[in-house]
Length: 190
Image (cartoon, rainbow, N blue to C red; front, side):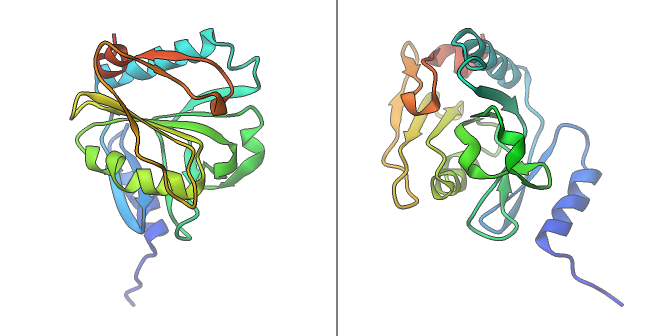
């Protein structure tokens, strides 16, 4: 007897079959695989963690975490795994399933683009806005800029603020800490 898998079951099977470092996500009913980060990508995330630590994020009741799932409200099996998230300190109390957490505990999500950059600039913008994530930052290495989306209304973000090399990105107050990030550091990892 041949039985079809649900999208969630296929995602689970695929996540166990891939080499280490790959991430499986379901965005708008579509199964996606993100490749492992390169060195510059990883260094960008390290610089972000250092910036949030220096800004006192822990003392402000926040955590900064890599690779935890964000359960998306659009479809029953949709979830994303942002590169970096700033979440409420008690985020573990909002566990939904499959290492995913409810969107209400996410203050900021950040993606550093790789070969699948179009997901970060398309479906994820829509998904994170629908989920009500207050701040979404895209380190767009494909187009050499940083995009800041904030304040979603009716499931949509207004047009993003765009930042070029030589500029600083100020993290919005909605996140809960004051942090300024160098566009050059975010793009290059140094």
